[in-house]
Image (cartoon, rainbow, N blue to C red; front, side):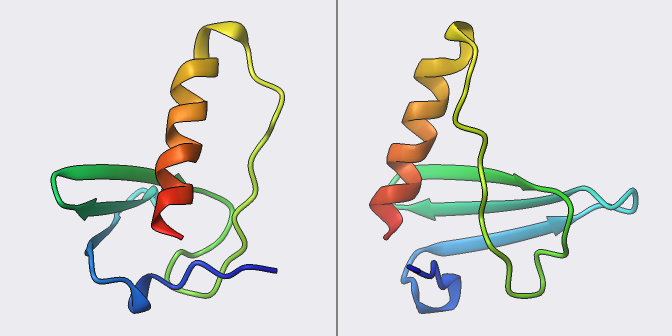
Length: 74
């Protein structure tokens, strides 16, 4: 399984954990950015990324764009 190791990336990584427990990771590189909302586990520990692949037609373009951005990090 491929591992996305943020520590090994040369881009800027910001992690936000709110008092309510919401978690966000913001990845910025050369004017591009990708924000991930994380739930179910602590982002401060090693985690496995899972995504639902059955999307409504209204959100399809946005989700495919997000996956393309994430893939370019790898």
